[in-house]
Length: 97
Image 1 (tube, rainbow, N blue to C red):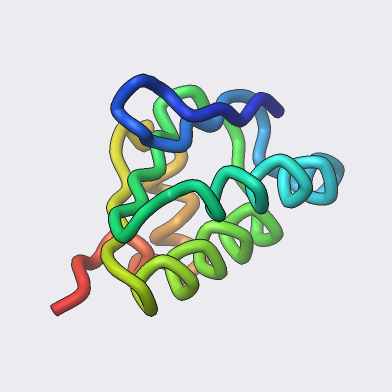
Image 2 (image 1 turned 45 degrees about the vertical axis):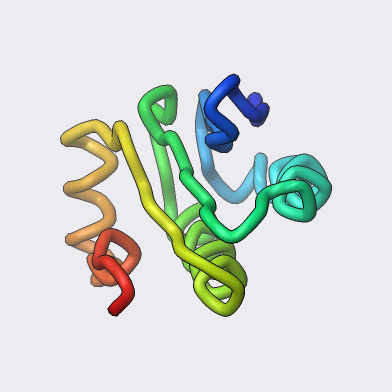
């Protein structure tokens, strides 16, 4: 799992966002989230697999981000979107009012 910030400030994930990668992903995400100001964009275009632990991480990131600003997901593949909806996590794609 690779996580970095691109030139637009979006957090770009690539690889598998699954239970075996979550501990490493969390340690990479935390300092990057601290640098994100008021508008968190999560780019999932490079994610080729996600499981419930990955979805929980994304949901936790969304909750933290919307408390101080906004949260958006871009680039989720059809496979990732299908998994999100099958798991009942479609709320991570909803815009906050």
